[in-house]
Amino acid sequence: MSPLQIHKPSQRSKSANVDDRNSITIWVIEDDALFRTTLVSIVDAAEGLRCEFSFDSCEALLEKLEREFAPDVVLMDIGLPGIDGIEGVRRIKAISPATDILMLTIFEEDEKIFKAICAGANGYLLKSSPANDILSAIHEVLNGGAPMNAKIARRVLDMFSDFGTPKGDYGLTEREKDILRLMIDGLTKKVIADELFLSFHTIDTHIKSIYQKLQVHSKSGAVAKVLKERLL
Image (cartoon, rainbow, N blue to C red; front, side, top):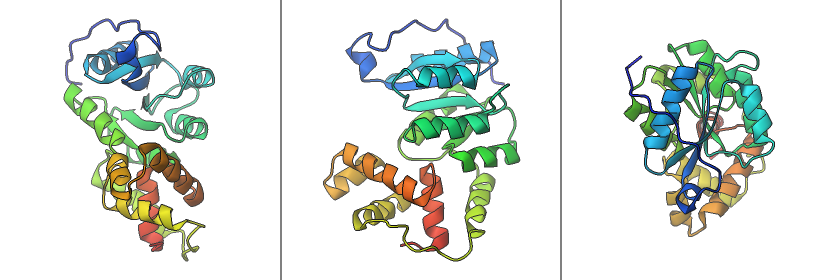
């Protein structure tokens, strides 16, 4: 793992000040205390990001999620004790589908990463990644991207080829189809909102509906399903 300077994370309340309220909120789940502290420091040192809570288990996060506003992004170890990262993705997405989840792994464990992506994870990071790569991945996923290597992306696409005969349009509205076309083109939610002269909130609501109808949990899953089943 690349050496990183570690700072003691600052204690910040949810409503500490206006800048905090305008920050992108990040939650970290990592059972290694030293690496957890490192991740918190990296996030808190970045402009516009704030590590709101950190946990050593998925159980602790799920308990907190029942009482707090959901974060924008979760950084989660894939190999947690108790509820592991793969099951953790399913449970977090069931409570907050809009939360982006980046899995943290020691190695490129294809099988585990693939299962996590299928469960709804939005991408993954190697724990050895330098600080700038971690921050880049966070911004990428916030902009609608899905950080993962080509091998994993191919496996996700191949999975949808096993679904067989196309099942129709899943009840998608014309507006939802318009949004899907722009998602396939790689546009972010903000750009889609501008293109369709709609608010960001309206686009976000439509995308949640699309995920529910297609029975997926992420942008990569929705795009893969549309392409494989030729829904547009």
